[in-house]
Length: 233
Image (cartoon, rainbow, N blue to C red; front, side):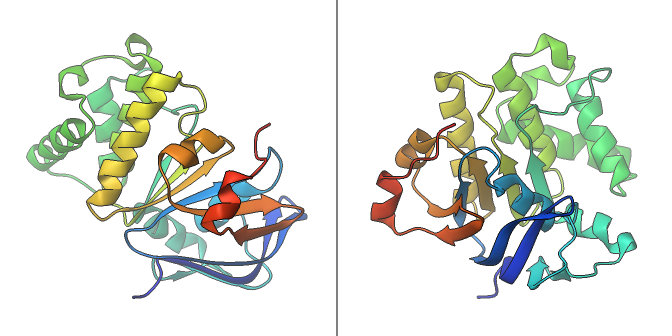
């Protein structure tokens, strides 16, 4: 099985500074992977390198068939269509309804047929349990509902990988649990999930592979090691 994401001896940058040296990582179809570490340890920079927001200058890296070293600017939008990205702060368009937020993404990625757009919006809202909220504005939704819409947005184009950067960071425990269960459902249906977190409880309740960012390196941990991680703020 070919990895969806692969790094070898990759130096991960934040601006002009290296924050992680020599990253080795393979993420395969169906994987559920956590990238953990304290604030400032470089875990979000790994995600930004995967999406080609941060350049990869040293080492090698590939994502969904694209070479991340020297990737052409015109190829970056096509790479990102294979990825679904979920942020801590939702990043919804506040002047548009839920359905209009989703339609904007579809049209931006080449969808033109009105009927197909409407069907796809209905499908993803059903996947995240938000079919009755399509006419609502983001400010009319709870935090958990906004995050469900953000996940719906992320899966519109049936991504090979979902990248979630602290997706439960702004949510209460009960709401967060619902969001994590949703990621688990998507993962069980075959989508790889890569989640950035510093919350050890999340990992204990929803086990997966774990990469720890610490002391300018990022390495996969053995299961027993995860129990003892000090990754809180």
